[in-house]
Each structure stands twice: as C-alpha cells, then as structure tokens.
Image (cartoon, rainbow, N blue to C red; front, side):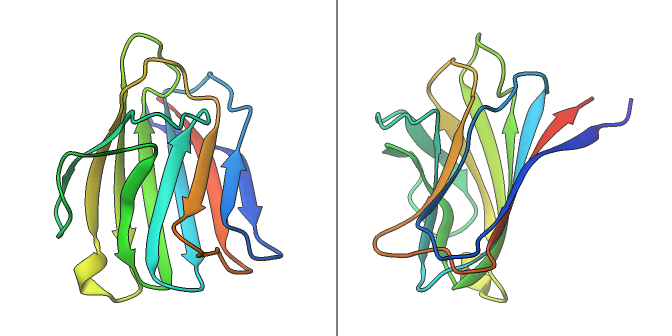
Length: 157
C-alpha cells in the first residue's frame, strides 16, 4: 500500500510572528509530517510543543550534531539546533493519534548551507495522549519572518 499525504493546514506569514499553532488536528491518520520553510530575524532554535503541554515531558534522545543528548524540556528544544537565519525542517510525528504509547518525532534540518547545523534529531514526548495541536515557536526574542511557510500533513498507509 502506498502512503498518502493529506494536507491538513498551511500557513504563510504575512507579518512576523514568534509562534504558529496548528489546532484541531483530526485523529484519522497514522502519522503527521510538519514541513517548515522559515526565515528568522536572528539565529536560534525552533521549538515544538504538543497539546499546549508545558511540563518537562520532552526529551532529545539523539542527534548527529553537537548538542547534548538526553535534554529534557517543556518543549522539543533543539529540533533545529543553532540554525542559520534561513532553514528548512521536516518532522515526522509517528503514531500521533494513538493513546497507548508515548510519541516519537524524527526531524531533519537543512540550514541554507550552514554545515554545522544540518542534521537529524530524534525526540520523545512522554505522554500517551493523542496529539490534537502542534505549536512551533522560536527562541528568545526571535520571530519567524514574513513569507515563512509551515504545512502539516496527515499520512495514511
């Protein structure tokens, strides 16, 4: 069976913003794919939070670049590690709608030619709730610039 990508939501910023939230995600797919083509006002990280969870339930379980393994935070920190101003990230959120296991996300980042920041990271959300919202934020006083595009897809198999 061939996997099918179904567009759930797309946002292109008309004004700068420090966060974008995809809400009311239906639980009818196997996985989610989040695609971010972004420009920011300064270098920093992109963070992801599920269902508004601000507890220390997020862990960076591995990365192939220079970041600490086992980092725990109130969001997925280091999904994009010390990125350049322009970057693209693709995150696969697996089994997002299940309620019998914690969630796993794998992210790939391409930082517009900045070799030290390209890489793949693996993250765990220590919660068995189905994911119904995904919030993408920047760190510190960063903002996503006008023209930044984020898209969320549901995957069926």
